[in-house]
Image (tube, rainbow, N blue to C red; front, side):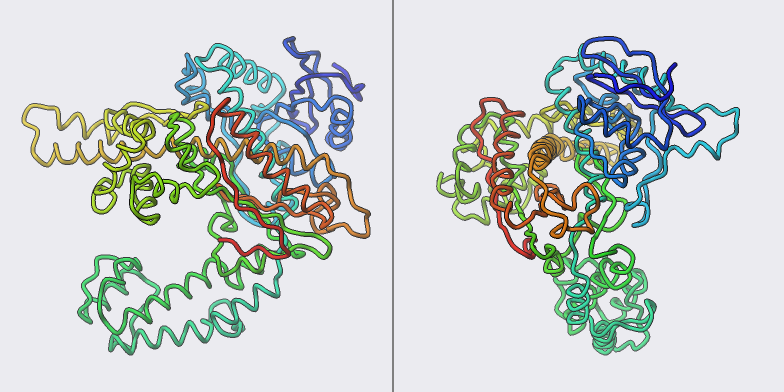
Length: 583
């Protein structure tokens, strides 16, 4: 075992951590065996990684990206590629493409607890923090464990039913992990004064304490209580609010705005206003501004693969739920621009591509897909086309969706047949998979028990109803899983291609740097925001047009990577501005 090693030339570099806190690295040549591990002192890790990136840009193999990469980014080191063992393990343990999943299902290869606040988002979670463990405990992420898990994953991919697709999924998922850390490091440019202005305009002047209600919210509450004839009505507790509503003759079963809007009562309008203002204050009010925005940067904590379909989630900051009213607070630094893009009808387009439905592909080529459906004479209006398509993908088979679905089935039999078969598989308790191989988890024990009870001699009508309801619910889940999951895969490929090309842009002079974006991203275009089908790049103004072209080209590349030779147009709405305004 070597210390202070020379920089090897390697295709892969596996990185583990020793109980001392230092690291061990084992280089792996393409198609070869791991070399003898070398020790990399913790204090030298950033320089060591930077040297290898410059000499050979290997794919780093490590336990969990945030545990290491946040520290590297803070030191000014960006890596090109990685293989995140934790995220890849979660895919392989369920993927139907893997011929033997037992090893992945039995092994507990869990990620550390996610960070929960802006401090953690900025600095990144600590390394595995082994100094606090007893001397006799063993670090489960030492180099031998990393190498063993990596070999297990490589074998699973190479012997799978679809090695090419599965390898692409693991690469995209791992790229997403890098991007999530980079988004936290760079942050989203945020105008705190504009945010405060929006809050003041909507809610009234900022109260002295978080516990006080702002004037406009309090006034809305007073109007609700006056209309209810109940000066002491509690508006912030759903059970107590329901009681107050029923006393006033409003027999609602919930406090959802959709149900409340159905009632004709003087209290409803001010109550809906109160709920809207309360939501703004609670989710993105001054407390949120103080906690999540620092140095004119908003740094949420993203969780790649946090949703079972592969969509991202967030463990703090609400990045996936920013209201439209706050979008003007997203603003570029002086001399910089925001290049914003979102995909029009991403999920229906993914469905057209994976099902090979040429008629649906044609309906969306170069234009709004819903308008294209209308032009195909399948459905009369854009609103109806949207309702019908969402019903097809989400399993809404009654009401207006149910009336319109037969028209879609006649116009687009391949696409509709694809999701119908996914639903039928789910109703039987079977698994379905996305285009690249992310599969649904096994059915829950409660689902199995409901089906078993309904099939027993002497089963009651209620047993049978429960079983049918559970089967339909799972069918709706699997129907949407294949579409939403494949759309998430396309988005990851799009992100990864954008990221790769942005790294090639020249740096601006230091006096024009966006300093708050950190040492890696302060002088060149970089991704600053991601939300399912939308991205924002923060770019020096002189590069904005070229960045926009990169974003457009990346959409074509992502489509070709996933659906080689396909003819689906993934259409983007793109803008270059100082402030973001899209919802």
